[in-house]
Image 1 (cartoon, rainbow, N blue to C red):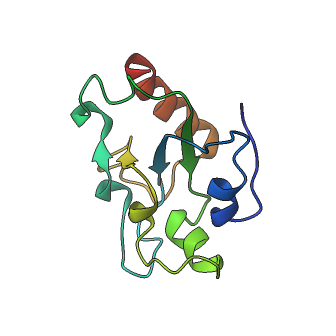
Image 2: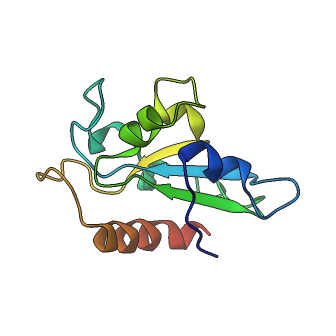
Length: 121
């Protein structure tokens, strides 16, 4: 199921599941987008995840950063007080380490990310 949230906090608080999500993944594809200068290289590589990472997962949430990245989404959301977007997720991943460009198009990012996650789901 795909849904659009009005804010980063709403991504978590407006879950359609009574108990919320049991596992969350954040993906950020922008380079140097945040105030701390994080890049798409900062997340864990999907290949480094144990094969059983999602075995007990019933409701997985995958969040993609916008054009300016998850750091910009976090900065724009005044209801969240954390500084690092990685702290909001069970796993903060990168699908394109050393990507060589400032951003990856959303349709490319989703295809790359989900194809990498698919064998683990």
